[in-house]
Amino acid sequence: MESPGRHCPLHYRTDPAELDRAPDLTAETLYVIGGLYGNTAALEAVLHMAAEEATAGQPAPTLLFNGDFNWFNADATTFDRVNAEVLRHHALQGNVEAELAMPDGEAGCGCAYPAWVDDATVERSNRIMERLQATAREHPAHVEALARLPRQRRVHVGGLAVGVIHGDPESLAGWGLAVEAMPPRDETPPQLESWFRRAAVDVFACTHTCLPFAQAFTASGQARLVINNGATGMPNVRGDRRGILTRISTRPAPPAQRLYGTTVNGVHCDAVAVSCVTPAWEDWFRRVWPADSPAAASYGTRLRQGPDHGLPEADRL
Image (cartoon, rainbow, N blue to C red; front, side, top):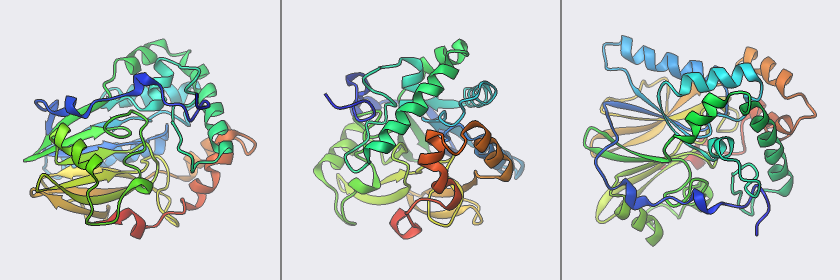
């Protein structure tokens, strides 16, 4: 048995074939917002971006929070604020929400961290989850709503079929679509080809693994794409303190927000930047997670300067 934080419970298993169905949603513009991590500044920025698109005379984007929208929001007020807003929109469970709704002592934080993540990071994540679970117990209505969330969604945007998941197609906390697991460009491994075929989608839009990338593939003779937004609520590339969401649309992304992307079947699939580390939010973070806390130890450097991951590593197109 793997230790808490590395163990992946059997009930986290998902079946890509279950995505081969009629669409759960259709949209002209879809925001896939993964890893909000309880960041209210990022949440407000996403809502503002969506409102700006709507006021430009276009239909409002469809917002889909694909898991781990809770994490840093360990105080009661912020926990309520984040969940009340997110649950007004479309949402999926991430491992964080799964462990808030149905705690599994063997899972710890539920991240199912791979071997390349050090033990100290795993232990700190378990401690963050324990504190967040204590806060969640004060909000039973939110916990019940989290328990009802699905774990994958099929969304049609224009002529594009998108499988929106949290981890990988076979596990809520899977790392099979992490940038570290990607093959060289122009290669499509059998496992990935099988996932596309079984799900009958053109795009997998995922998160969970915290580092963003987009990479094109060919499966069954057709163009396919994996796009992982990294995190909307944390910096994603070195020297850039912005979050990222995945925007999939029949219309081009605003140039000022677009970081990289491509088109698949004539539909725009882009990583767009989101303001997430504002002075006011930093002050809040330091109050809730002081310097000796597990969240400050694990994420303080990333929040100040971004991870050791650059745009060339993210843009694999």
